[in-house]
Length: 281
Image (cartoon, rainbow, N blue to C red; front, side):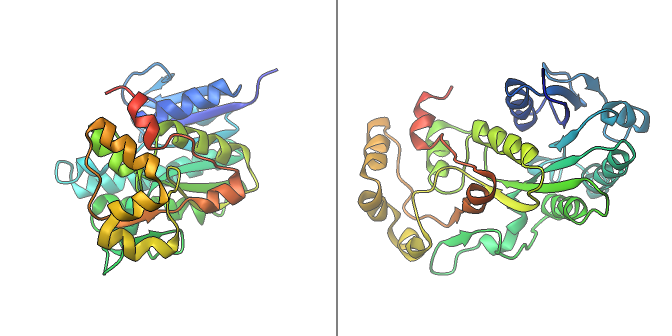
């Protein structure tokens, strides 16, 4: 017998499609909602469509909310539109979820909400969930506002927010460099969402990043001479970069720490730098 129904908003996007695939593989009945068609999208239309919202949410046990306007839309889309889509639509989704007796909300947030706190000062910034959020633009502001709506919701369902690291498509050399400290494979992101959905008593905010090579004592060395530190801590990573003809970053400005998700959700990212070599280019 299969598991219950999970609604994934943004199901035609990179993250949403990966989450839908992960949930279906695990035995969940997947419903997808997106403005654009896609293999997982069963409900086609705008987040602001009240009638469609009710149809999409009714009967779902879990709602995974990945749909949003993103950083590349900044400057191309009016700030008011960002607020309507990212914040007001999230509020309406929460209201509808409460009316439809949804049990769990998983919100896809972003490490971008740390904003100005990500600027290094003589050492790399160690980014765990205790770091202050200091939004830089309308994307950061609206994602943080929506995240707060979710985590502070007064409704009886449980909620969790995942601040995911960088996982959009990039050139392999860039993707590999980011995977060292601030990137994550979308497959690990999808797995984190399933863990978040299924650990229904776990609440709060969690960073989701790739496998960690470093620890908080490394921040000064990361900023001053990242290749030397990498050579000491992970010579196999240095060798991989050399074989591929990729340049190691001279300095690393931040490290995203997702150990809290490891402790409370059992999150163990498995697609590190080496996985980039096998990924489609």
